[in-house]
Amino acid sequence: MGTTDFSKSGTIISSNGNTVTVQIECSSACSACHSKDMCLSSEKAEKQVVAQTNGRTYTVGQRVLVSGSKAMANSAIALAYIVPFVLVVITLIVCLQCCFSELQSGLVSILILIPYYAVLYMFRHKLNNKFVFIIKE
Image: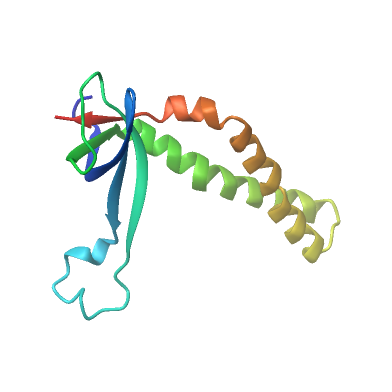
């Protein structure tokens, strides 16, 4: 993939043909701090991603390096955070300009997210093909 990749190590938890499910541990930015054991703000979460095996065989419990492109990460950030934020702000401004009350404008601008996420859900299979992780050797 080149120099614009990101990688995370993880453990294979299941295998299904040409794909494997890998569990990765995501840590907050303060995970490298020496006081993280005493601090309540340090966060850890376990995520599962499906990665392509590229014809190789992997076993459950094996440690691997999962890789993706920065462009893929940027697209995911845009779809999950930027587009909904812009949609809410534009809807709020338009509703306020159309003489809705502040309460009505706020409700409509938040409710506009329901069809947005419904459309994302309807195209989830197409998005799964766009967001592809691979196992790096």
